[in-house]
Image (tube, rainbow, N blue to C red; front, side, top):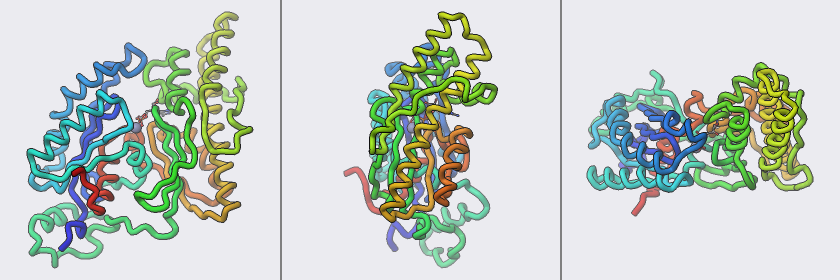
Length: 371
Ligand code: KG4
Ligand code: ZN
């Protein structure tokens, strides 16, 4: 019996930015996902303060790990591996998770898997809710006692190995977060090409910065989404960036400068009030998403020209939880008969360790361990 015959039980850790997260996953199924947010700490600085982030991760990591083991009712000796985000992210923050994971792997004598944070966001739509469909308890018992493997029925744990059909792969992933905005072609799990990415700020970063100019707090992205609902997205016109460039890269610095100038002018003219803030949020959010939509459309046209067939867009990253973005993308995808896949819950769009566990389960099957 090969170790890869069963879905791996993995403890994952992510400390890439301002959230300490731990998760227990069995194959693609979440058994526990715990996130300790530092938003309250960084709020007063309007952004992540690295030394404070490091200190908070150091304080939170042990309780987070213990809490997810407890929630999943898992003992360390049952685990198949430990996985940790190795980057990209904030170096002092990443370091806390990496050191902790190395120590655990040594202490519990488990293989260690290093995961790229963007790969995990790109695969986050594959995370499955623990439902009755999965005979989780039975699977854990059989993993402990291999003699009982005959009891396992083929549909006890469907699709854990993700037997992707030709319909699902290749897929296009779009990762839009506070640090990244990327179009990634997923030929197979583990075989990726970056087709376009931001050349300056990320989409979430642009929303956060402009939201901050409007005093919408930190992180401003979700607040921009909320207040934009009361505003008119056509009220203020922003340029569409990078239209003369034939590539699929994104750029937000020009949009950010336009917003800054506009807000300054409105301030000078004493025109900033609740109403203009709503309109500015709606118009800027629209500009950010229109730019993504424009480049996505160009990319899909290019796929058509090249006879490259894809059926699905996998959307991940904090900004992926935005309903206006999903709507905007669906409109474009409709033309190409492409389906939008999003993580099954909004909290799986933002940083979380469950997505690290799912990416790690694929690496586990390929024996991609840290030596
Ligand atoms: O994926 P994530 O949690 O962390 C990074 O890897 O960066 O993404 C955080 C980003 C922040 O910029 C935040 O403002 C943005 O995602 N965000 C949103 C929404 N929720 C989070 N942006 C727009 N609409 C939202 N609902
Ligand atoms: Zn992230």
